[in-house]
Every structure is written in C-alpha cells, then in structure tokens.
Amino acid sequence: MFITRSDEAQIHPVLTKMAIAYPQNGLVASKLAPYVDVGDGEDDGTFFKFDKTNLRSTYEDIRALGTRASTFDWKVSTDTYHCEEHSLEKAIDWREFKKWKKYMDLAVTTQELTLELLLLNYEIRVADMFIATTTYFDANYYSALAGGDMWDDFVNSDPEGDIEDAREQVSLHAAEPNTIAIPVSVWRVVRRHPAIRALMREQDSRQLTDDGFPKRLFGLNAVFPGAREITTMPGVAESVARVWGKNIWIGVVNPRPTKKTMSFAYTLRSGGLQAETYEDKPKKSDVIRIQHQVSDEKCVSNVAGFLYQTVIS
Image (cartoon, rainbow, N blue to C red):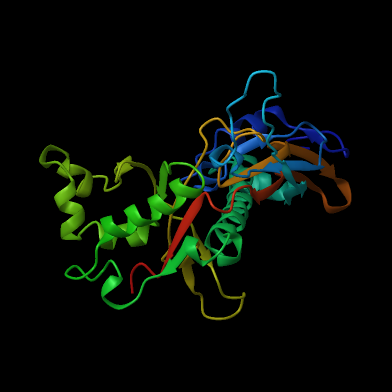
C-alpha cells in the first residue's frame, strides 16, 4: 500500500541501491575475507587449497644429452563450499506509515536496521573463523600472550618483535603478510605503548591522537574491527562485548581475490545484496525483506595467518 502494490515479493530498486551504499562502520568481515563471486545460483562447489610444490628444491633439473628431462609431481587439494541465503524481513503496519511519516521514512529506517543486523551476523561468522584456533594448521600459527608479554605491559612487552615473529612464520610457509587486524578497544591501549610511539615519525604523530587509526602499521595494511554485540538473552541485564575480543590477526589478504589465488579466507558468494517488498493484506502491512548475500565463509589457506590471543589484560 505504501511501498508496494503486490502480495508477491518484488525487488525494490531504490531500497536495494541504498542498501548497497550503506556504510559498514567498524565492520571488517569483507576486508579480511574478501568476496569471490562463484556465479549466480552456484550454491555448491569446490575451492582450491594450496601446497608447497614450488618450494621444493630436490628435483634434479639437469638433462643429459639423449635423455628425457626429469619429472616432478604436484597436486591440487580441494574442499567444498555450500552457500546459504542470509535474509531478514520486517512487516510495517499501514497505520505505522501514517504515524511516523512526519518524522522519518519508515521504509528506509527499517531497511537500515535490517541490514545492520545482517552485517553484524556476517561479522560474527567471519570473526569466529579467524579467532578459533581450530582454523589454523597447528599451534605454530597462534599464541596466547600472558604476563609481561601482554602488550599493556609497557615495560616488558615487545609488540614489534611479536609481529615480526608472526610475519616470518606466515611468510615462510605461505606468503608475505600484508594485513594486521587490531580491534578498536585493543588499539586504544597499545597505541600508548612507547615502542609503538617510537615507530611513528614525528610528523605523523597526529595519527595517534586525531582519528587514531593509521592506515598502515608495521608495514602492514591496518584494519580496526569495532563491531559490538549484546551477549545476553532478552529479559536479563544487558551485556555488550566486542565481537573480535582481545585478539590480533596478522596474515595474507589477497587484493585480487579468486578461487585460484592464495588468501587466508574468502567469502564465496553466489548471490548479492537486494531488497524486496511485498504486501501482507491479512496483517494490513507492507513487508521489507533484505537479502544480504548467499554465501559461505571459508579459510582457504590455514598457514596464511597468525593469531595472537589475549593481547591485553
């Protein structure tokens, strides 16, 4: 009645364009697990995992006269993905449109709130993958800091040394890391560390005091997760926590993601964002349905990242 004239769900072009342009403040899931579009409707398929054949130096490559060249072996490992649709919808009573039309565009506000919830769920799925130790090849790719090693110990800890250790581990077994993810709440503590301040050139010291979020840190692209979630059930005292906790991640994020290129993780996507509307006459309502994406988030190289847990107390 107000945003649709049909009881069949139809794509709403205006709301869809607004949803695509909606800002993701503090949400970094797509920056750390970039999108790889696998094809419309290709909900199930395979993706490649990488071996180290190209690092093996034991193959004899000298060919004697009249002989065949030596051969070598390589393999392609694969795993499967299954894309699922991530959608939410909200009915708006026709009387509500009249009640609030002087104060807000109820359809746009509802679309924004719906998308916020979908983006938060996406962020949580990616964060859970990145901070789970089971994601990594073995214990050489994660470490829980304790005592004087924790970065809020400004006397004994060595943040630069820890990051260089992680970079070497990843670069030796995968590729040179290009990204560091430091949660906002962690950065607000560790940016006061004398060792980090000493690394900032004097003319760039405003990065630590103005917006507070430098684009690069330790030669790596810096990402600052800021997502929050309510961790308690409705009806009890509310508790809000940071989605990424007190963890720091260093690793490889491919700037040109494809199924054939190495990265720590990808969001394999067979369908993108769209807004649909339909009329629910029995409820005297218009319904807004937001599909965030049809996707599956996968770690594609479990040696291409390093996790530091409990970086601060």
